[in-house]
Image (cartoon, rainbow, N blue to C red; front, side, top):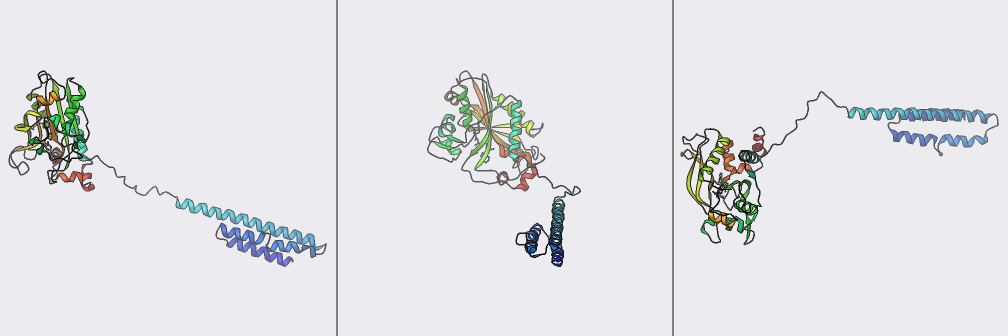
Length: 344
Ligand code: FA5
């Protein structure tokens, strides 16, 4: 029996040492110390031993159990250390590795231009107003002196939703909405940036959705020269001190007189080039003195107050500002295009 115990101890210790992980170690514990294990078997057979042998074998069995348990314990600690070591190794941070670059986004070039234009007008005392993109026929046309079936409605081909509701074709309805809200109070001095929609075919200079900035000033004694001075100040701040502007007679049903406003070509400085079609001038907006009928319809006495208004196409201004050749770049979400504006 002594040999059996010694052999059992040696075998158990060898198996424990060979265990590669906690599972194998637990299997060894159950195998050698479990209720059905060989040690329990030997202890059960002790009854057959003589009275002298029993304490000796009993003591030896206990020693074997203690040896197996302490070997198990040491092996367990060893395996736990190994697991910890592996974890530490896998989580080691190499502080000498180069960092991963962080990609910063940047604002869209149109947003930048809108903010720049807003800042220029805010500094001149204008407030920023807003209006809905889905607009009623009344505000988009009728309140601007464009009754139903008026031929000038053809100037702006529209996306209708119902007979009375459409996507606004310009930011001018905000003029009427603002004047109505102010209930005859002066001064009115607002700009309104926003998206507008027209059934225009997309090409290098046209888009079916584009951005306008409307301007409206109403007060006692507002004259055409105020309009001209305001737009000249804007052009100089936007494109440089040497900028000149010119007003050409034009027609809008909501202004009288009306004008198209050109700036001297930013590419050739007015000499004449391909961009300005050799004229030296580039058209950037429509403007005029608010039509008395429009003032009256929105609750102002056209005998007492006058006003000027303008509406500029922001994309066209951005094209000139950044020398971009095609308006469609603004809407294609091409990162190669957009990233060029991260530092401007
Ligand atoms: C208007 O929309 C008038 N509401 C402007 C106005 C306001 C006049 C207040 C008088 C008083 P017009 O249709 O010309 O006018 O458009 C104004 C500007 O929008 C144009 O000068 C041009 O820069 C821009 N624009 C017009 N159509 C397009 C288009 N399809 N794509 C991009 N820009 C456009």
